[in-house]
Image (cartoon, rainbow, N blue to C red):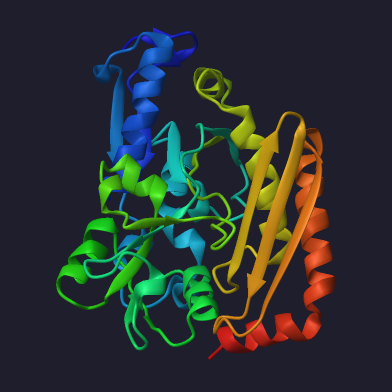
Length: 319
């Protein structure tokens, strides 16, 4: 075991075991190897099965929300079995367990959703009654808003499972994050990426975040060299917006912050699960006040949508 600064190796990287999660862990490892002149043997990838990987028969909102993909990994981080945890940011709850922090972000990939079908090139091409499979409440609501004549079915599982379901005819099309497809070397499967103007992405989509223990300076200093500040600022805005509205999986929420120089522009959206009602907001401000921009947007959107809208969302989620 050798020491790197104050950090002993092997450095244990915790991750879910899906191909996409592992690709994200390998990307983190590669960036650390290049930044510090380390070898693969200086790392150990620790695969951890989460409750979210086991429960595939119902939506996450019914099973307990986003924390189902992080709970077991965070337990391993807290008790020292791993040194850091690599996550898809869009899977991360806005409130973390005490003693853990989310301060390291890799450069963000493509934020867009990809339309994938063996039969059609775009959602516009799909005939009335065709089936779109997705487990995301946001995607379900947006599809229903754009094409209320399509049938939307619940469709859980990792990327490979969802693609197999397309081959078996369970659905005529599905939607996946472009970033995930790119990380898996499957970008060519996207029949058409959908512009954010038409289909606003999930908060954090396309970004890998790294969770560490509060006070673990050795690990934090190791990771600081691969941290991307622009991504951090955009996500500070998006996650503040999500947290102020509803950080769970029960409300269809979308949000995207973009930086241009020192200015940040944010667009957010909330929808009823059936897509029958939608409210959008845009806010901008200095990038240095990213979280404040997100909170302002959430407050303005809550006022714009009105309490009746959020009561309707709650009623729909309890059915």
